[in-house]
Length: 322
DNA sequence: AAAAGGTACAACCGCTGGTGA
DNA sequence: ATCACCAGCGGTTGTACCTTT
Image 1: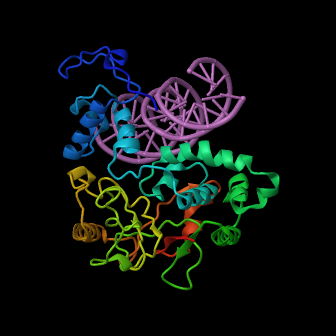
Image 2: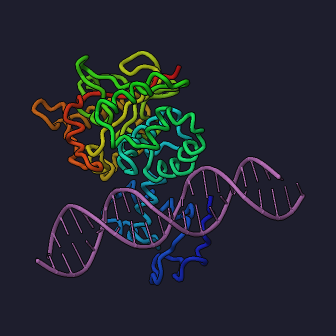
Image 3: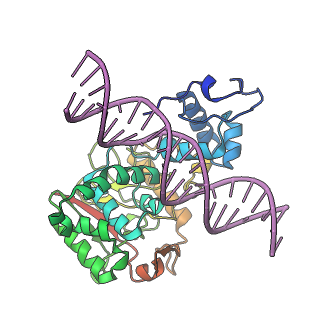
């Protein structure tokens, strides 16, 4: 990617932090700047971004700091290529949500809206475009080309059911607590915090088996939480727990008070964190404390509320790799 | 080996909405 | 009611890297 500009190139300031700042830096971030921002964020938490920029000794605007943190430096980011499961989920979510990248990103733990947007524009879009006309009947193409916003709930359901059974390499399966629960076109309200199935003492384990769930991406106690199953336990092998949407915030999860240190390297710590988070967030959105409120947002011509009104509260995605 | 074209993605820009004075 | 400030979002751009010719 771009290499960081040399300090002399993009700034008219002196390089010491006490000098008067005449012009804000632009362009790529240097490792030194990254270091400053990370250290500041981990020790002070997120405040007003313009204050962050100033107090961290960065000749950057707050906006730039925010973007850098959110899209690149945040400890809970999952780096690397998108998995087929994530790809499938993105295609599906895009068909439902359109270009609402932040909403899509909220359902893909560890991924940023920018990352998903880039991935969509560079990879998926191209792939769909290159799909032959004969393939246009495939669920993915159909979803992406026509968009599901024009379909009713049953059509969406049928399409997604088809998608979940037709994939050659993987599938997205939505699981519910109750057999009567219907398909959720938006696998949103599968909130780990307060989810009965994931209460204190439950163990979350890593999909690869090389650690504890959440540790790999530093997710516990930070922005979002991914729990990938490694076989056995509550989450099956290859299953991916998708965290809640707006219920997860930096503030809610201690990002602002230094609790996000990526140091939860064992299951006990994770569980302790979970207990803490659950207890702090167990106010929930309904009368028994297990549900979470879903934001009242519009999606095109229809209200998300309408779409979500029958959505069961405890669904989680189950990626089955065949 | 070098040039050209393509790709991926970090970062910027402009806009919108929320909030407080 | 208005204004200013800020956070957040989506679109777009710029460029390092990769692939092809």
